Image (cartoon, rainbow, N blue to C red; front, side, top):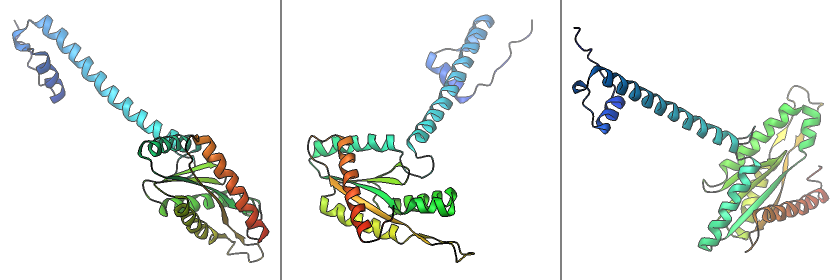
Length: 228
């Protein structure tokens, strides 16, 4: 009769056998083969589950991110606003939101094309990320609109931050270095700032900030700073 084959088990396989409290060499060949097959299936399923968890985490990350800019998309941004409101209620801390709409952005697409427009959006997203805290929330709300949630920030503090962001974005311009006849487009930002009020939903807070932004854009148009 041939001697039983001696197996060398992996660490995960060995740990599973130890957890079952089995001593395979003491079992008959048929029982041992059945248990080995079962253990192999369990180990395989564990590895597959681990891969699925990693894929799910990657999918969730992609679902939260804007398709172009390295910031939250609108759906994720609104979710984070709701979360920050809940924290503000719990800890009785101030919370503000800045709604940003780019000035003269349509001119960039009309004159230089959408690739140039995408480049502008990426630069603006970079400014917002670099000029805010890690605890702040930045999102692209659609087109050339962005939002910033400032936790633990009063209205006055947020007004100062909005002015800082607007100044940085106002310094952006798009020009054709090879053709001086092509118009230079000066980018700008109209910022609406609001502070959260008790009992106000995330959607209502964003809508108020949107309205405040339109008022600011009207003021900038009156001074010739914003065209569209």
